[in-house]
Image 1: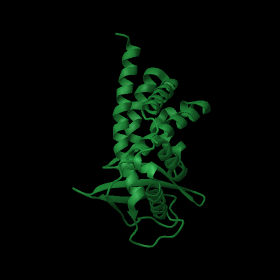
Image 2 (image 1 turned 30 degrees about the horizontal axis):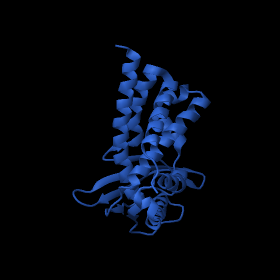
Image 3 (image 1 turned 180 degrees about the horizontal axis):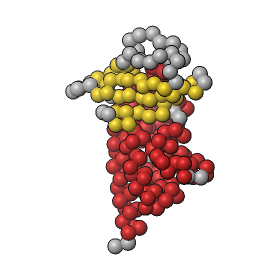
Image 4 (image 1 turned 135 degrees about the vertical axis):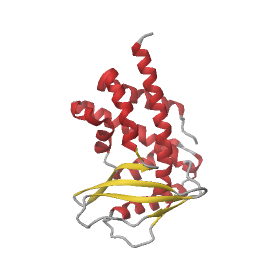
Length: 228
């Protein structure tokens, strides 16, 4: 058997599995950003206030657009890209997912990795947005000092069954807070991808990982035509 073909097939299977798990994470993250409510007042520049603000803006946009509610993927992607993605540090998130190989990548490869990883997560997040139902989210008290530049904002999804823990890692750059990782049920998003990315890079190099991500994104784009 051609080892290259085996590795490519194995990689695509791994990426498919990871995408399904990421969809679960994204669904829960969407619920949190769409339905979370704060039980206490927060400063405008506080990280938990950022999560609350994103929540309100996202759910209001969904409620106001029937095309989004009907599953128009282009509109959903536009919403996610405009409302949520500006508040995410994709360079740090991508570097964390790629792991030690990030420093071995050229600036051009890093740019391509970041672009393809962003596309993968945007489409995953967009798909999750259509699954938002009647769950509610509680924002837990923020455990941080005013001088902290990295914090974890903890939320809890409440619906049928046991509550589900959902946490966000945020960093402060100047006066701006940005999300750089999401944790659901004890698993951080970047960690989910790191092992499979390392396997692909070990088999086919950094360019091989870029190609695998690009192929996956192209396949997803072709399989989800816009509605309306």
